[in-house]
Length: 87
Image 1 (cartoon, rainbow, N blue to C red):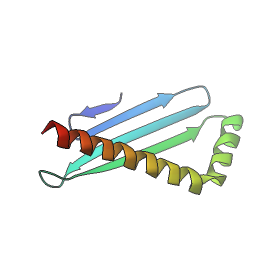
Image 2 (cartoon, rainbow, N blue to C red):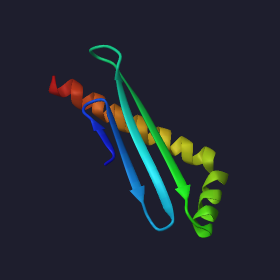
Image 3 (cartoon, rainbow, N blue to C red):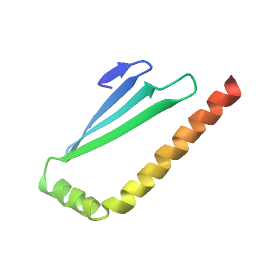
């Protein structure tokens, strides 16, 4: 955990032998009932085999982005539903 500014921002860093990664989630209140959620992910390869894996992921970037956006939207919907039932 790199940064945690409750409830507005969270940044996580992941380090392995082949990759460095950074994931960020930022929440921006728009009104009492609306919040904008910004999610970012950055991955860097540290060696040749990791670079080859990232290259193959870039070739399927459109499909991965669509799946990623769907998962984030589902998570946001779940959070909204839980908020409505708790209040």
